Length: 316
Image (cartoon, rainbow, N blue to C red; front, side, top):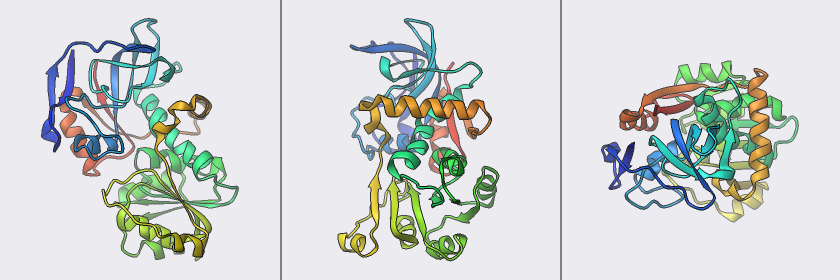
C-alpha cells in the first residue's frame, strides 16, 4: 500500500511516500480502507517529536481517517491515533463511528476531532454559562471555525474571535462571531476588552501559547476560565498560583485523547454535531484538500497558517 512514512524527525522533508505492507489489526481493532485522512496542527509537532505524546520511528502519521471497514464494509470515521496517512489503517473498533448518509469525508473528519474538541470546550471544560462572553483564538482554524458557530447555540452571550488576516476575520464574522480581532499579541488585551464593551471576558479557548496566552489572561474576568488546548507557537507559559488567587482565575488544559476512556463523552457529542450539521446549523470549512503524495505541501500550508478550517489528504 502507499503511505507517508517518517524515518527521522525534522522538517516537512522527512515525510516520504513509500510502499508498505498493510497494517495488521490487533485485538479489538479493525482494518479500514482509507478514502481520506485528516491533517491537524499536532501532526507538525509530531513530525518534530514535540507533541504531547512522544513518537517512535518509523512512523506513519495521521490520527483520524474516513473509509470502509474491511470486515463489514461500513463507511466510518475513526480515531486511529497514528497510521492515517496511508491507503489502509487500523483503529479500535469502539472508536469507529458510522458516517451518516450524504456526509462528505472532510465534514466527517472535521466533526470527529475538531468538532468534538470545540463541543467539549464549551460543555465540559469551559462550562460556559448562559450569557457569558467567549473568546475563540484562531477563529478561522479547524477547531475555531466550529467553536465560533457553536457559541450562541451552546449558551455564549458574546463570541469574540481572533484571526491573523482580514480575510480570516471576515470569515469569523460570517460564521457568527460578534466581533473579530487581529490575533497578534501586541495590544490584544485592550482589543478584547474593547470588543466586549469595556468589560473583561469570561472564557477563552486558547491554542497559541506564549504571548497570546498572557494577553488573553490579561482580559479575563474574575472567575474566568482559560482553556489551553494547544501550543501552536511552541512557547510554553508559567502560571503563578498567586496570580490565580488574586483574580479567581482557572487555567484548564484539554487534550481530546484523554476522552478515549469515556466513550459516552464521544458518542453523545458526535451525535449532536452530526444532527446540527444535518439541520444546517453547522458547516465545516474545508481549507484545503491535497493528494496523499503532497503531504509535505499540506503540512507546510497548515504550519504556515495559509489554510482555514479543515485540511484533508485525499487517499483514494
